Amino acid sequence: MSRHTTPPAPYADPYGPSPHVVIAGGGVAGLTAALALHAAGFERVTVVEAAAAIRPLGAGLNLMPNAVRELDALGLLEAVEAGAVRTRELRYYHRSGGLISREPRGLGAGYRWPQLSVHRGHLQQVLAGAVRARLGPGALVTGVRVTGAEPLPGGRPRLLIEHREGAVRGRASLEPDVLVGADGIRSAVRAALHPGEGGPPWNGMLVWRGVSRMPARAVRPFMLIAGDDRQKAVVYPMSRPTGQSGEVLVNWALARPAEAACASAAERLRGDWNRAVPVETFLPYYEGWEFDGVSVPDVLRAADSAHEYPMVDRTPLDRWSHGRTTLIGDAAHAMYPIGSNGATQSIVDARALAHALAHHADPAEGLAAYERERRPVTTALQRANRERGPEVVIDLAHTRAPHGFTDIHDVIPAEELAAVAGRYAATGGFDPATVNLGSPYEVPVPTA
Image 1 (tube, one colour):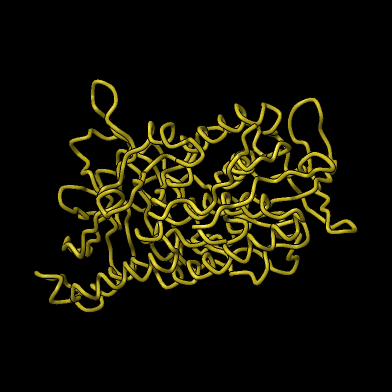
Image 2: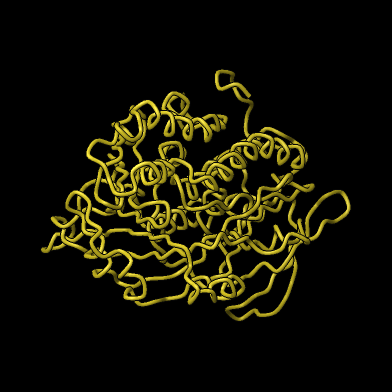
């Protein structure tokens, strides 16, 4: 649908109520989808989540302006931004300390919306609170794990579930009108739709993530990505100073190939993906890494805790939707943590899904329309991230000047640096000109 045409009214079935949509997974994708569907006129939406409660867990993430635009359209920007900071600049560094590039972000880059750095737990709490407030407390059901799905005659899905908490325990099934698999990279819904796929492939890299509390004076107001063609570090603040000490939360993520001694990481692909490890496990690899006043070792030593993960993604699918069942977020297109596109694309998925369902009387046609729009974009991003996306400039700098440089433009011309960033933004459709057109997913609510 053209952005400049008047969209039809939200979903309304003259012969009965709006369809019952069940969303498997209460993460960023699932909760945003529930809110988007509600805003589009769907009254019967249920989110089932395996965890016993929605708790403020995890580390940090960046939300690109196209995702912030959609949160704003849902009336959530103020609440999200209350626990976030605006990312105004991104800097890439060679591991020797040389500055490769610095890019304005958000409003400073010409967007109408900011880019936000935020703790995943804060974002999830805002979304969960909004779901309960707008859709009712019964719309978010915790302690229910999805174990599978199967089609019924006519394309309607049957969702297999397992009650894990509370007075009701055991296995059961649900038969909604629409099923949305938002249950993450190891999605049970995806496995049911693609039973021969197997687990997520591992690229041999390990990722360590954590959150540190540091005095604001020890942190600079920019996001940095530094390293070489072997290992990298990402560091950025994600809260405003609080308390008498003026501490801020700092998110950090590190990536490095697994050593022979870490070969057990492959086995952990089938086990614990959230393994706590001492910072000392990987700190020696980052000694001496300091970039314009930000000491990576100091950040790591201030960590509350550290967790180790294998770096995995999902191979792009040639189909997300089967009848009245579809996938969104990591269940559809898990990608390497590059370019701030994990949560960003999940939020855009959610809005696109609600918009497509609202404009098609047949839910299966709506899901097919959603997939036609979103799958090509996210597939391109998955493939770009396997080629290191915009972070390829670090690899280029190291390959051409492994011992460092005085002037980066002697190593990588300014035009080449700009082309890398511009090409990635165009791939995901989040260049300023496109984003600033406004949300293409608005569904006006008819007035009496």
